Image 1 (cartoon, protein in one colour):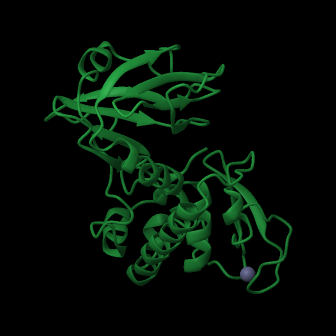
Image 2: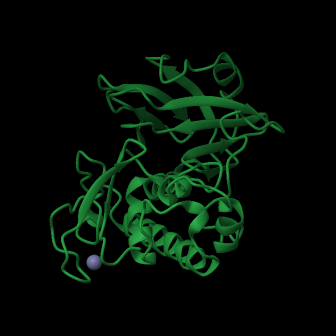
Length: 270
Ligand SMILES: [Zn+2]
């Protein structure tokens, strides 16, 4: 599943090909994505010039004068800019034909991705109620500490709650909690202010590093469990059950929290 770093890498890769281009037409071969492609996208987008491309959580917002296309990669989606003559394959569901002669092609074998429309001045319901971006100044240890008081839920679930902070997926939550020395099952409300300050810094460091690596290896292999190949050898706990902790040599444990596999070291994380 594409995580925040892959979506941000996609945004950076697409921006120079899209910004300033006019969307000449849409070729929709399969409108039934996670949600049906809305009529507003089909009527509003053609003819418009792309003013910018922004990421919010794991959504990409392609801005035009009357509104923004809201794109999500789902489980298996990808967006590529290709020569207009490139034949479409079975899973190439949507093409945006651009003034440059190229196409923005959306490919998604499992069709959990989406292409939606947000009129100018409105906030799509999928974006309403989201917490701050993890790499923004609005996200810090004080926010985690304040929002967690009285909460008995596991700190890992709290960190992955999109209303608290967006885009901290399973891999990055596991790794950040290890780096901060916090046990993933600890009650969110029992973590001190100092330890949340450390956790927020580790979330930022790990995500920024993944984006930086992704930016130079965009087309790298992604393994079936969604861990980008370039990142795999840098993981401390994720996917390493039974292997030796890289810090203390104790075996890494695996457990399920909120239906997601979680990996941790009982010696390094309290
Ligand atoms: Zn350890």
